Length: 277
Image 1 (cartoon, rainbow, N blue to C red):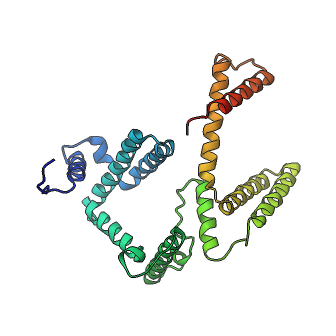
Image 2: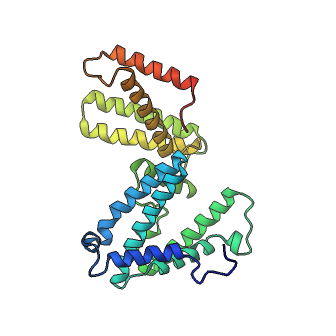
Image 3: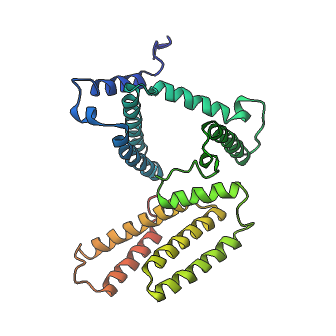
């Protein structure tokens, strides 16, 4: 590698931005030229989930590819909006860097943070101040809520968890885990009553309450429910596919007892050989 400083410190980023601009040019790709920021939003969300899957699996090569796809979507959205006079990719990056500096006074200022919890608290406090100031300037009281920063586009389970976190940081929480644990039992009883009545609207409402209560309990025991459910779903998929292999992929006509026996064999096999992380 040359000792001389590169005239372009981020050649990969510049190459990506130039490629995106070329795709959006008058003689570029018809599909890319047709896109809007709104039409790109679902693609950004999908790519973010795919990147999260790769990161959770610990697959570095796949994670690198998927994070690249996320970056492509970010760059495309900024290109589209800059064409209409909006902020450029560089403007967004500079604003993000400035926000990181403001919200880390224990790194870039004279404050101290002896633990990750204190550092996170500093971040949240600075964020709250910034949001409140912006809301006051815009005359929007709703934006002043501590819950306003939780996006509705999040998966429902994760959104519930984040809403509970935000409310707890404002002091609206049980003092210990016994409160949310009892709340789970209370909501389950109400769900059972709704099921007994056959009231479908009430069943949906009470089931939602059960799930929200479980998110609060997860927060109190230090578990991210989205990750926990994802891990359990992976486990179910792994074992079910083992059942399919065991029974020759012919489950039609098989008895529940046969499938249950194959399931138990899959569980026993996992105990002997730890499943992939």
